[in-house]
Image (tube, rainbow, N blue to C red; front, side):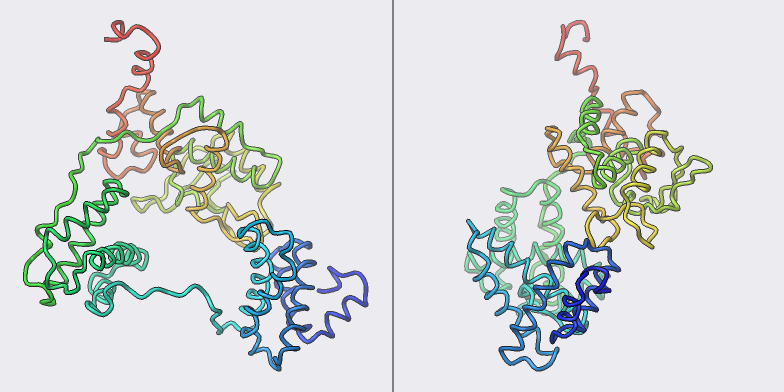
Amino acid sequence: MLEHYFIRPQTVDRIRNAWLGELIEQYVTWLHENNYAARNIHSRVPLLMKFGEFAQSRGASSWDQLPDYIDSFVANWVQKHSQWCRNAADRRCVENAARNPVSQLIRLILPGHTLHTRQTMPDPFTVSVPGFFSYLRQERGLQETTIGHYRHFLRLFEHYLERIELAELHALSIPVVSGFITECSRHLGKEGLRYTVGVLRVFCGYLYRERLITEKLARGIEAPQRYRLASVPRSISWAEVRCLLASVDRRSAVGKRDYALLLLLVTYGLRSKEVAALTLDSIDWKRKRLLVPERKAGHTTAYPLSPVVGEAMIDYIKNGRPASQGRALFFRAMAPYRPLAWFAISQRVTHHLRHAGIHVHRAGAHTLRHTCVQRLVDAEFPLKTIGDYVGHRSPEATEVYTKVAIETLREVALGDGESVL
């Protein structure tokens, strides 16, 4: 595989004769199989040879010892190659350029080895309430992502108790908990506060069950009031949709992919997770249908394939999608090529909205979903039809779009309000 990237036989011989020559050749094969660009291979191989020379000159005698020399090699590399750096961000770029290939090589040759990473913080209340997180996993059956949310809010609560110098949990009271919720309200919205209250209720309920407190505090912890139809969905106008689509540069593979993503989201009102779940098998070209799996209600929905959407997907599949044995429809644009994650889809929407100069509060993939629903409501489609089209589980989820007469309000703003009234 080295001959594929290095023309001169002397260069290939020099790589193979190096102490890490065998490992580097395996690494180059892996990079090739994962569709890394040739320029990446040309830049990484010399660096890895330098790393091998560095480790060997400082006493390394076996590959198992290589991880011990990563930090010192990176520090030495930064010292020699950071003269151009103007700030800390530039120095981090130089550091990452040295550390990432070496770490990647180590992970490939020593799969059981754990590299030094950011120190993991212990769970909050580990000493005073040692069994709480086991309780969440084993008795409540929560997923790790949900437990991570508990960990986050309880760590904030633990820090709050330290600041007010409440050292013993048996002294916990409703005023103390309310003070923490009030503090959180300064930087959290209503949904964030409701989640915080839910975490505190579960935590205090566990404390009472384990007799670490004597009062049933969970009953007295009140969540902020939430009124149905209290907020307006964050949609954009159809003129802004046209502006958004026109702003995408479709000459690149990324542009072709993102253009298809945006069309899917705004045409069918899909969620980002539903788009991420699409595969090549989701498109029935013969019947001109789009099959959307993993809807929230747990079923697959078939849509007529719009000609505009179909053309955009054909352009991406033929001219932008990387060659892969995987069946996922959308992939990352950089090696290693992996299916595009749902949160990355939302990030791409946010990027293009900002690039087009469209300002939306909490912009993301749901902005286009809301826009699709709002357009159907404005066109006076029945709510049941709209709900089925976008996969709403209940009519209430669709009703929120009917509370504001968008077009009528625009007429009031532009002309004589009395004629509207």
